[in-house]
Amino acid sequence: MTRAPSATRDRLVDAFAALVVSTGARSATLEAVAARAGVSKGGLLYHFASKDALVDGLLGRFAQLAAQDADLMRAAPEGPAEYYVRTSATEPLAVTGSVPDQLYTVLIATLRLAQEDDPRATAAYVAANDGWRRLIEEQVGDPGLARIVQLVGDGLWNSASMGIPVDDLDDILAQVRAMVASARPA
Image (tube, rainbow, N blue to C red; front, top):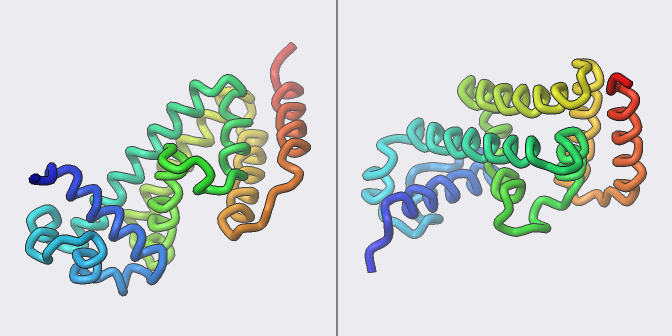
């Protein structure tokens, strides 16, 4: 059985992202990526001619998943602000296969690349972050409050990504709901 080219590309991007997260971009060599994905180096080079091309593939996946997450935010019955905070505080692997779960690894990899001074990664993260904040701002109508809500979510994400339980999530969400409600015109 022959694998679809897109499935192989996805496996290569997934392998690259996992290596960047676990060992850093410098250690994520073409050979290491190919080995982790279970393909030959030639197979990797067929899909990605260079490590830069792999970075572009990763950032493309990040943009795609961030856009899907923004669509989920927009459609969330509780609204973008509560969605952002709730999904930020959730253990990333709790809902395996979900958009937030898929987004988690490529987000971490993107941040690692940005920390290693890759301007493409920084630009990709800024674009996604701005998109999420704009959705919150559309809901709350106040740029400052939108930023506060986003910072609450980011802080909770930081805790959850380090395995620190967010035991008071219901209380935090109640506070977010109250802030959002008070910001809406009567």
